[in-house]
Image (cartoon, rainbow, N blue to C red):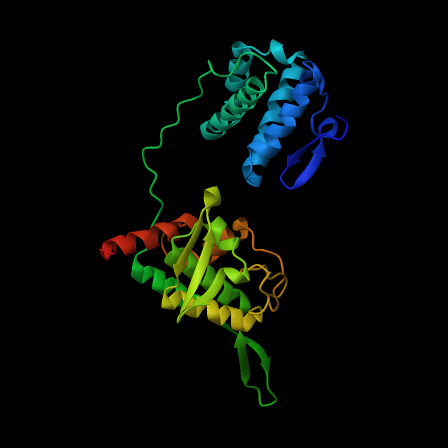
Length: 304
């Protein structure tokens, strides 16, 4: 069992390193360690979900050890309920419910593997969390066009001997416009947009198409709206990455922004970019707002 490890994010972390004091895991035998490893590898495929559940599980197990509980079978419903009650003082209700879901799923996995007999978290109720208003703020079709047109796609690159300004393409502006257009016209989630590679934008017949890899392993292909195709084509031509088929489609541009890296643009950077570009609009929108805007306009046009 010395080589067993847990995958947190993309890294393989040894159990002995990942969980301080593994007595509570090994108290019921090596099968418990094996089941714990399998839970975070085979059972949870999405990297971000795995990372969140990994942290939640470690927090709970460490809390148990701090309370003097070193036997996995000694964890009873009252122990789980006490932990859930305590973390409500520092976490939001949604996060508390996620912690409880982690504990339930973890012990379900251990029960399935015949490591323990009963799931102590099943009898524990989490805080009530009811969302009565969940609509993301929307932009109208006109506001969306104004936003896209407001993003500068040219910048002054140099001044000639006669003192005239010479303009060239603004890579960051072209990239940002293409990202926002992609979210509006494909109805795609931001995670699927930034996950696209160069080959996910391709030509089929006389039209440009996009291939989105959505949640749950779903692949969604759709023809690109002419406005979207124009935005992406201008971005690819200026960036010079049209032939880099294995590279990410939307990339980071550090420093002066005159060159792109080969690193995929993180979703957090997209959100910051949107907030920066939306300053002229009198509404607070996020990544999901463009998806909702596109779908709303599509339905209002009585499209199928």
